[in-house]
Image 1 (cartoon, rainbow, N blue to C red):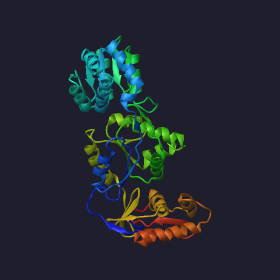
Image 2 (cartoon, one colour):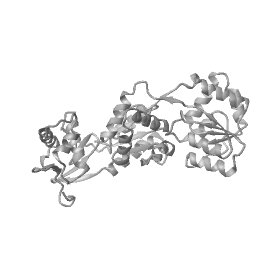
Image 3 (cartoon, helix red, strand yellow):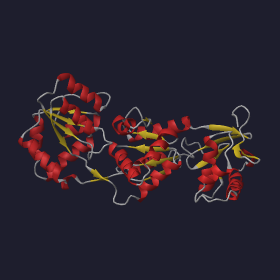
Image 4 (cartoon, rainbow, N blue to C red):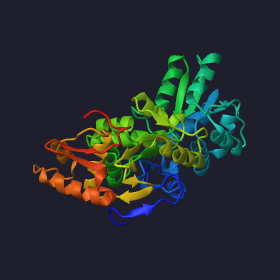
Length: 386
């Protein structure tokens, strides 16, 4: 699509919005659900899942539970529990593991975990309506766990940003003997290039929303952001201008612990997540009335009078900065600092502003304030003090 060319919106709710996708599994399906609704999608798998049958630690824990079965077993994810049973089958241990778990009281965190338990010809004793790990903990603590041996199927590798290690620690403090089951272990991607780009887009405001479908994906992105020195800018952007969207409360927990607000659908499903994004982004989109035009600044474009206008990075950076303080004057020096490549000559700002005006197709949207800088020419009802 050529820079600045207007593209009439065709009615899709996400037209003009850019959504980051971090999913490793079913990413193509999720991307299709978003693009059908008009979104531009930037994908970077945040994790690489280790094949369970090759996981020596999982095999060790499985044999330990067969030899000494737990009194209680907690299944937290459907894919994790199924993967565990399939790996056990690969080791020739499926029958023994099923027998050991049949002696335990099985708790399922949600319907997917419940379905996986039943697919293994086992039956859960209880499952919370909320699909919340916190409710599972409350249920166990209410009945008392002191002296009990409890197997807890983990989501992924232990990190400072994942919620389940706290789950295990709470049970240990209450007196339980906890056996973590490291199902669905993960590592960071072999090549971090795509994730680095997604982090940088989030920091710069180039995304409207960043979606997560697992707590490990959140943890992996935070780890990588810390490695490249961008964890604080990433968190600040997620707190202020890029919407964090999570598939459910377990996925959102690491972000909430860091003060990052998130939103999620009522049901933890990919389809529900896509629909939720399509409802939330248009609702939260800031619309301005400038120089007689309806203007909405989004992650990767500007919508003017219902038409999507794609801008070059320099023009987009200027527009985001002006829109961050609508109606207020922004100095040439500040605008120069946000231009890709920077520089010291404020004439570069004048050139970029001229190009921005052309691309918007409505030059009067951006107003020159002599000897001071530029601002969005808000109509009087929206205009604040200089």
